[in-house]
Length: 469
Ligand SMILES: Cc1cc2nc3c(=O)[nH]c(=O)nc-3n(C[C@H](O)[C@H](O)[C@H](O)COP(=O)(O)OP(=O)(O)OC[C@H]3O[C@@H](n4cnc5c(N)ncnc54)[C@H](O)[C@@H]3O)c2cc1C
Image (cartoon, rainbow, N blue to C red; front, top):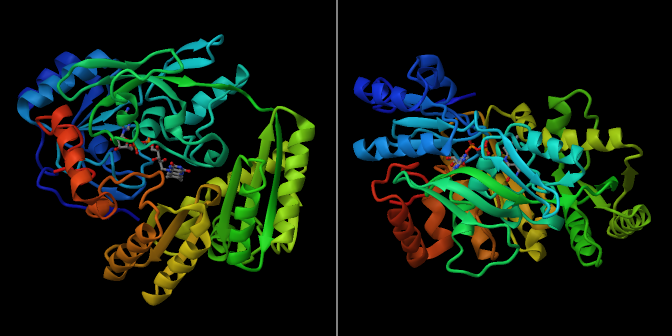
């Protein structure tokens, strides 16, 4: 169900002179102020709606540079947008202006086999890129569950995590260089093919995770690995969440590194079974989906065996190992559908992606359920347990529910008190903006504000996001 927001800009068209100028920069069919396009590009996966005044589909960095120069001269907000799968409202046109969709910028420029690098335009859907690379024997590890639709640029802008960060880290660990357009319209190239560089401040990493507030990323050069051909995958069932949290810790302490440890609680299992007939997952207090991968089949087998034995020692009542690639893919497909499956429980979802130190996973889960109980909100938890990144979903029947506001505030306070972060991978956007200072403090937030001003003196690029004003 969509949350519609009336903004003063909703009924206002863009100045016809601006539209005319935009049609001199882009082919006319790549500039639209048609109601159907304004509505289509009004939302992201938060299901909140903020219709922009126009939608633009550039194809080159030069076109984006010209658009930003025009926008800067007239003070018109510009919102970079990839696949619109963001979960914090980052791409939404909250102040009117123009959505800049990168969906036509999908070219794979070059696969540099000897340096194991790929250079690619930012609008390519991540899944399409990963499949194309796999066909050539390469592996680009970042793997958010939304990979089919999320774009490379969106994953860079959010520093997306996903299913295998426990072994491979997050997006920032795989970016070697980017081409980006500054809000002033200058095109910059940061990074090189050199694996190491300590020249100046790390501007490359400043852009990764900047949520489209500092620059539009148009192209990136990414590090690759040879594709690991062997995998061992199993599910372990637990009668208690605490036992499953202990098993996570034991596996991580074992010396071997699983590529994924995903946690799913009882209510989430019920939700996914209700959402898709073919799921048929056993309903228990906690399920762990564990995978080992690598280049040596006997080693992968041995590691899988070790992880399963540790789960048993920690109280797993059943272990079921995937016996074929199809079975394994089915399990991951079910896992990937958890986010939409939550709506089987109630029409409105507030999804938080808190991340805590590994030693605090059990305590954090206890706290999340206690907060849900206190405010009488259905609380479903799943997530990347191997990173301590738990997705807490508060499900409600009304979009505006003050109980949820109180629950989220308490959840974040508890997270920070446990030494954690209010966002492990989804970013701040608009939904978490009021809490930026809770984690960063005043001085650190002021540094962020100063950086934003330096990059974007006119405040035209994704204004109002991340509480940067
Ligand atoms: C079902 C589902 C599962 C998900 N699972 C995961 C998960 O496992 N891990 C995870 O990390 N996230 C996950 N997400 C969240 C989301 O997919 C990621 O945040 C993703 O990185 C967003 O990519 P996008 O292309 O859809 O970006 P959008 O939603 O279009 O935009 C997100 C932000 O990036 C900015 N942006 C987009 N493109 C550019 C660009 N080229 N240059 C500069 N800024 C840009 C936008 O302005 C906005 O602030 C999930 C979402 C859904 C709906």
